[in-house]
Length: 253
Image (cartoon, rainbow, N blue to C red; front, top):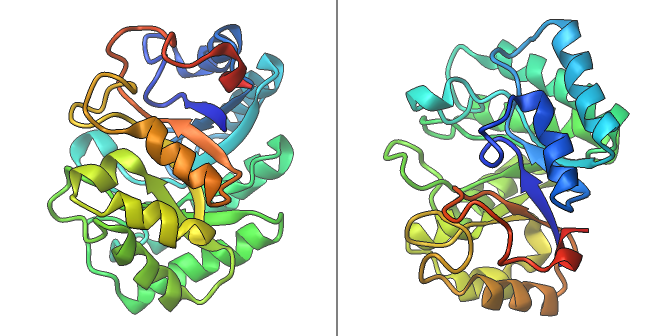
């Protein structure tokens, strides 16, 4: 398995632009981010600074979220948010531009706390079409801890994916969120591996690193690998021990 570190939830004691270098110093050569800017259309200088921080650190950007609103305030994406289509689509253009320059080929499109409407499907289709220009995939993710968020299981997401009707839209299988929501992880990793575009992990309960909860993280990852998953596994957990001793050095490259 190849692991990348999510720098929007780890190394948060450092400014955003210092985190890629810190990840490299910890032995990782791949990183992912949520939307790293405060707004959907950040100033050009902020985009350039972000790209330079990743490139100068010598790490590869393998995952990037589209703008999802104010996460701290409870927003969980703009895909289905009425009236915010222009912001979402602007961030798609910016994200794909960043990815084209840094080599990223996966984007997370958080759905938002609203029902899946035709407009939401059109937003996903638009994102998929723009991402296809650089050979990238758009990911749709089930979430936990957000009562109004309508996508909670792999089946919920795959229904939306089917309705979008694009080959480059896939499931983001976050094992933590799926487990907390009571999904059948054995079925997910065996029946849907060909529809998984990216995997993220945290232990459950608690959302800490593997070994801090009760979820058989490595067991499920082994099943994913045995069933043909060859992509990255994003470390999207809240650090409890402050280190990466649970992950052998060779797993970080």
